[in-house]
Amino acid sequence: MPGPDSPKPTACLALADGTIFYGTGFGARGDTVAELCFNTAMSGYQEIMTDPSYAGQIVTFTFPHIGNVGVNPDDDETGDPVAAGMVVKWMPTQSSNWRAVQELGDWLAARGRIAIGGIDTRRLTRAIRQQGAPHVALSHDPDGNFDIDALVKKARAFPGLTGLDLARDVTCAQSYSWDEMRWAWPAGYTRQTEPRHKVVAIDYGAKRNILRCLASAGCDVTVMPATATAEEVLARNPDGVFLSNGPGDPAATGAYAVPMIQGLLDKPDLPIFGICLGHQMLALALGARTIKMNHGHHGANHPVKEVETGKVEITSMNHGFAVDSQTLPTGVLETHVSLFDGSNCGIRMSDRPVFSVQHHPEASPGPQDSFYLFQRFAESMDRVPA
Image 1 (tube, one colour):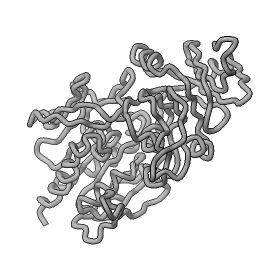
Image 2 (cartoon, one colour):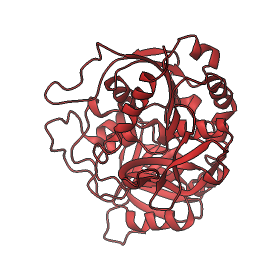
Image 3 (cartoon, helix red, strand yellow):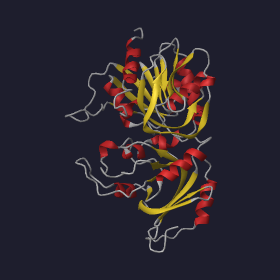
Image 4 (cartoon, one colour):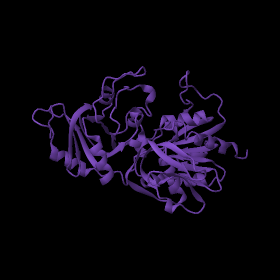
């Protein structure tokens, strides 16, 4: 609790084990419950908050300077913030960046997302690492009135992400076309006018920059909902299929995604490329299993080794589940591993143009260490017999 001379807290973070953190609230007012994770990236807070893979989670930012460059529409990965809330060490200062069009706090408030500042994020991060991602309740009340017992009870009642299919909540309602390419100086975002390949992207919670990378690799992209069937996908006559990132438990989403992917695998020459949840969906469809991680991987500084070449890439990560490499079937090879904990970060079929990675090659962490994966996907489509 703050001392007698301290300002009255206006926000409160209650963990399911009864631990309470007090701070200063900004953004929207009210309460929210979610799983708490931490992200170690030094930039990209707007992209993180709008990444659909963060559905059902509150993000603790370990880097203290959050909000200092404001927000702008170009950095949204989807239309609105998807993460349930955010936790920061220092309250956001007035933004100082030529691209800023709005302050972070105003942006969060307008979009119904709660945030808390003034938190010892180092202590909180240690707790997450040691105890696993906790269930929490976050409350923002300008008058500082908190029912602590009720907040702890809400945190304990949160069901967690295991067994939860969140892809249905963040996927598109209907199919649409995408031709915007990656940002480049000085033109900014431009359109793909001479695509070489028709690609269907399955939207489990796709980030916009992934779609831009596909377009930049020469793809005419059609985005389809997560619940699309193999028959609906193949009716588009795609040259390749992309499986996107997304939130929740892959085993739960797999109830409808795995049969669809297995239907695609009946086409032996069809290139398939997956990222994040799409990687996990592909692994499940091939017969492997996924597991819940203690606290997951979230950040823009994760070293990943490509097994066949020994090359190390600095990658962006955002996942709380992982493919169990011990369950990969014969004919499916592990291609990438995390140098933090040895967990699986990539697979490919030994005899077919089908591969996937756990990390986010579109997120520019290296900044271009992993862009080659999109080119590899395009080249696999080039090699398919006409």
